[in-house]
Length: 124
Image (cartoon, rainbow, N blue to C red; front, side):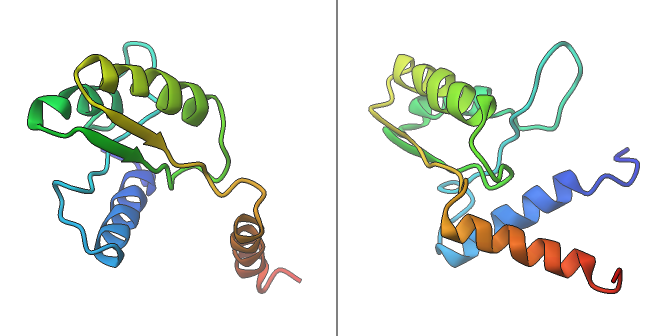
């Protein structure tokens, strides 16, 4: 039970919209979930387990984008860009790219400004 948390639904919808916009199928563009730690069950499929399995499916090149993160952090830089790259290469993958988040780019600041303006409507 999600107890009203829209996180999973929002991630899946973002993935669907990106997949449609990029004209990719569900095998070529997959949504996985990061942020797992400890022994608690987390949303699946897990990113690390998916990455480890891709070379066995014949995937030699992998680009990872993290639209659930607005800025690069320990999870995107170390876990995605470091650990998951090592898993992929260690299982026979050849090329791995971690696509940076929007961070403080002009586009990133535009997105944040738009969200703030939208959410503040009616407050002032």
